[in-house]
Image (tube, rainbow, N blue to C red):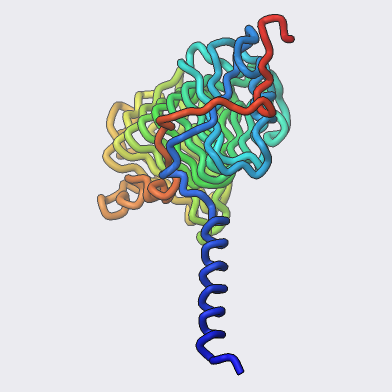
Length: 341
């Protein structure tokens, strides 16, 4: 008969093999990913693709490596979707003022967006994303429905519901966001750091309409070190969801912000459940003496959870820009010349 130790050895080997296979299948750590596949978009035909959507389409499904799509300056009239099965894409221009993605469509908020992100671990850098439909209907410029998405130095422009910050954890750094009604809306957990919010409202248009619907949801918008300007007057926010949660900290508020600051959207019951707070904000619009009584002038202890990337578990997924690049294979690169051949 075989000795018991033999079977133990087989068991140990099998366990180690299973562990190694599990490790090999584990999700990559975004914070440790520094090398990327480079795909170039150039309307003149000198890149791998002429259109941004074509470059996104070329990324393999269930992608697990960084893909850096570099977009040459120009105006790209495209309606773009980053599918859910294509994570780890970075889309980058050289300058937001010179790399413009534009579309014109009004209507339902999940249909009208110029740019829709469904994938996780998406990054956008130095782009203008705009919906030029104008006033009179919901017209989303950017919809973000994937988890772990970050935007750096982007301009996001429309009128109503400009940024549909829908679901997931998101980070916005040094972005310019413009609109007139509920122009930052949705139920994501998002940190806006050093962003410029510009209201086009001529009355009481809301800057935010956060949609948290239950105290069990760990969502909300935090604005840290931001700036608010506008054409005439606006409020900081109103509750799309009964448990809407928005905090402004260390933010400059121009006189565009109305003294009451917040609105209950015609439903006084939401005054008991919405959580609207301010901490050490400044400027003529930050005077708190006339704020609605159901908003909060936060203490440092109350503000602390909203003052760092811990709010969105950012240390586990916000990744640095790639430091090295490799060319795409012939299967991914279109390799068209100036004449499209």
